Image 1 (cartoon, one colour):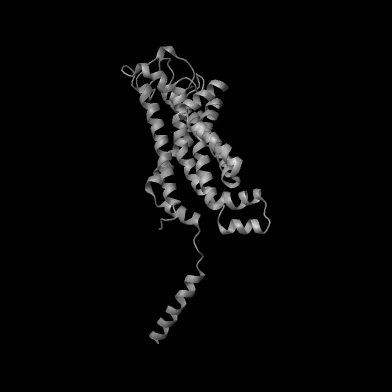
Image 2 (cartoon, rainbow, N blue to C red):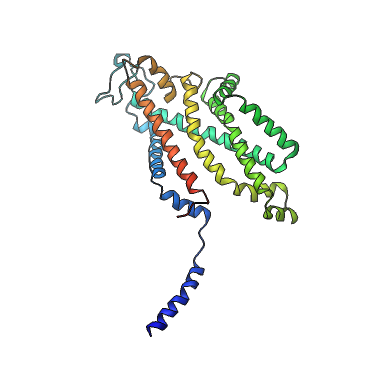
Length: 301
């Protein structure tokens, strides 16, 4: 009787295995991402900073732009946890509000890079010919300039403000996305299912939107995630040079610039904005590294 039962169970196992739903690429990626402790730490830190940016009006203990000369250059205390700057403004409040600028800079600039770079990369890689030559020569010209120098040229044309800084950083990051998307398209356009779509009469726009772009999303997402920290640092660098957001609006890069003359006498002016910038960039980098590993098809749980 036991032998018969064991035989029945053994014969049923293959049927159970066949009935299991196959795991999707994105499902496997999510499982690998959830198992990555570094990525989870990055997500937690980023969510905390994001909530701080959203809740700045309720979290900041003081008005971040109100001048109070009597309290100028006060060290960290029970009243001002991160001290005050040379104008008597609370550094903690300015750090909290400054998170808004840095988060917006990173996401908006990368959104510009992803959108414009992906469109040009798709056109270049799919149509080839004259379109490919024009786009790639544009990329060569843009890469001939260092990213920060190209951003400075664009800001000189548009004027120094937050919107101009976002556009400048976004445009300077386009070449990387163009090249990555073009390389993915060159590989995908020669596959059998793309040839089949052409044979049945699908238009080029439909092939690009329905067949090529979805299969090229993984490298685009990873590159965008890893590009956000670079955009944040570039935005902070522009603000440090006085070409980003205009004062008195709080910005971490501008706070570092204003505090550099007081490093020996008021260390808190540069320390706390620098730590905030470090935590934000490190958090997104940890998540980006984890996402890159999770989307690698060669890895398995």
